[in-house]
Image (cartoon, rainbow, N blue to C red):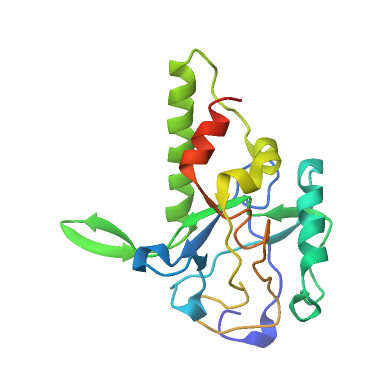
Amino acid sequence: ARTNPKKFGYNPSFPASSPYVTAVGATMGPESGTEEIACTSDAGGVITTGGGFSTKFTAPSYQAAAVKAYFNGLPKAQQPVAGYVATGRGYPDVSMAGFNYEVVVGGKTYQVSGTSASAPVIAAFVSLVNANRLAAGKGPLGFINPAIYQNGAAITIDVTKGENNCAASKVCCDQGFYAAAGWDPLTGFGSINFKNFNAIFSKL
């Protein structure tokens, strides 16, 4: 299907589409000093960040307003084609840079990309906040999704450009979603601003 647009369609990934996890998208741009956009293969990003709506899980109540605002704010030309479940759990929740990470394997340096790079960064951020909370005599954060949706704009850098309709093969199709102001099904609320994230979530 990655090489044949006629076989493309919406295919929500798991476990990212589960309402019981914090789903993380990938962005690109800051690593080269350019504007941060959704990581997409057609823009040179090697991979295309996933995102969309679950066919198995309904949207949790805490994200209902964000999803509604997304669809209400889209111009007609960016409305997604039919085939997705608009009432499903929307993902991702947030994003982080996911392009051209340098890793060393066997003494050699390689560049890797993907949400497998961006997600651990968010996990590290949460660990740092938990360390601060424990030092202050508080408990760990636990499940953070409701707090993300309560504080989305305050803890993120909004990413408003990109479309996830192209496979890693750079073959593009009609199915996909556009990034937009606020929450969107490519980058969530955008990239985590750690300074703000730490300040707000350390006080919860």
